[in-house]
Length: 251
Image: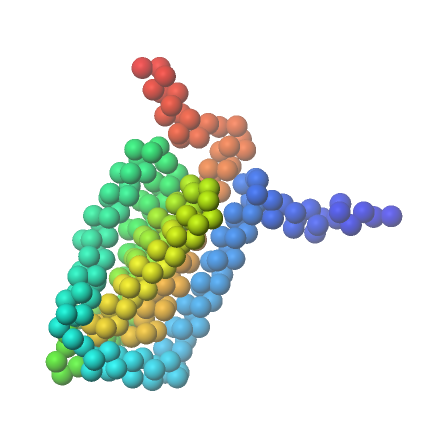
């Protein structure tokens, strides 16, 4: 009688859920996150293109924020949005890259080099693909001439703070520290998204789609680099950190 545990399907499932191996649990989680995030982005994009209900919510919420703007909160939101712009992200990305290099976290360093600038290029391509106009007001708080969908600031924040949270979660051993890292990343992404909507340069659907875009791109980068690392270990090749330590010992 055939043992169910030895069937090809059972072996395949066990391999995909195994924490070990190059094609194990990390790949399963990464692909699942990618598919969910891509589906969310596609659903929002379709609603925007077809003018579904969310586009009406977009306009109402944009005017709701604009009508309740105050000088003090506007200054705070301008600080948040400018700090998380291209220049700010480059500075923060460089600092994190330097920190990862000093800690010899070379695979995470690869993720940082690929995910942060790659996410910016991906967002620019999507903006030109959809060509959605930004919200318009008679007295705008901030004026931009580029396209609106999806939000570049929100996508970049999702990639950057998500990357930082993933690294800290992997390094932390206590659950409170992991929850704090994940919660802090979510809070920062939400703050950046709020600043873009409050300042009247993005709709709600812009920032929601951007968060999904950033999550999908980050899932691709982390999963790909993690798989590369595990395949090297499976072949018996030393990791980059081990090679660095060996080089130091020869000095």
